[in-house]
Image 1 (cartoon, rainbow, N blue to C red):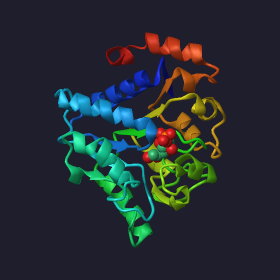
Image 2 (cartoon, protein in one colour):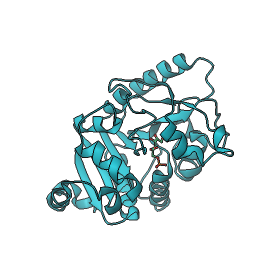
Image 3 (cartoon, helix red, strand yellow):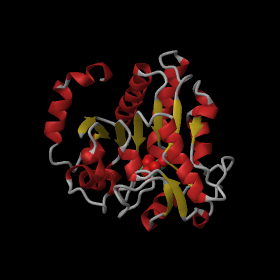
Length: 261
Ligand code: F6R
């Protein structure tokens, strides 16, 4: 696991956008795994700016999102399809038909999940998976105790996640209690994983995920077993990491990061 610590949230967001842009440049028909959430909004804004300047071309890219609320269709302002259109897809030259999220209104959830896994495989697998980190350690909506081998499925959201995201809903109690999510096994199959975490609120869970024991209690700790994973942090989110000095030295000296700084 590579850990990149940058001074502020905007630095971490820009670096993450550059990592995604580098993937798109290296493989113009790459398959991106995308995430939603407050953390990613600025990443998508930076990518939209790069696209407007002609620095990155999404015309051959396809994408699979991590998750979608059960029961919400794409026109619902709280659906993740709406979020993705609003924050990214409407602002870059990606083909909408090449963007996929689980269908929150699927009549047969099991069939939808099996089809999602099939579609990812048929696309050749995810080249780069973007992740955020939930307050309870979740990645996607893989809540604590999700199996590390789990695949795309319908899950019940944890009380912590209902608290974390309830504020987006009016009233908060109207937030769906279930969601479709790629599994941890699905995420781990991605060739490269980029997790972005910002803010002091996430410092403790970031330390548990990166430096704590690998445990289903902290789903993001599974990434310690991924062969090509990088976590991008601001100073606030990194503040409880024991090896902060080492991560800074490695980032400064490792030539892989040279063009992205
Ligand atoms: C969203 C997702 C979640 C979020 C996480 C952090 O698609 O899969 O795991 O990345 O809940 O959310 P924010 O960024 O809102 O703190």
